[in-house]
Length: 70
Image 1 (cartoon, rainbow, N blue to C red):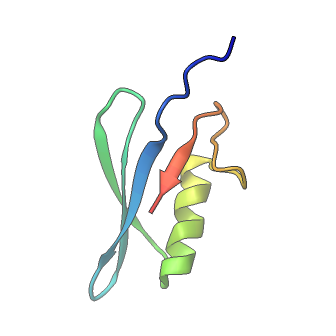
Image 2: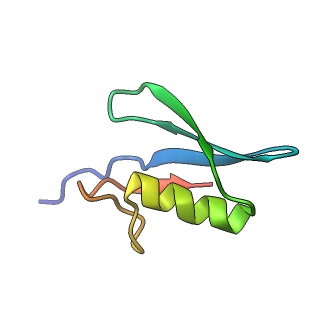
């Protein structure tokens, strides 16, 4: 019997002109968190966000939680 698939956690990389990016995400308790990223480009910001959240190539963190990163 398959268990129901839970929706993915959502994380967003937001451009904060003129000087950088921020990461917005909900933790497992539903609390929204925001952090400033040190990246200079959007691609670097995505990599930094994935590293911070522990997201692997399959889009999952170390606990197996699926993430949707925008």
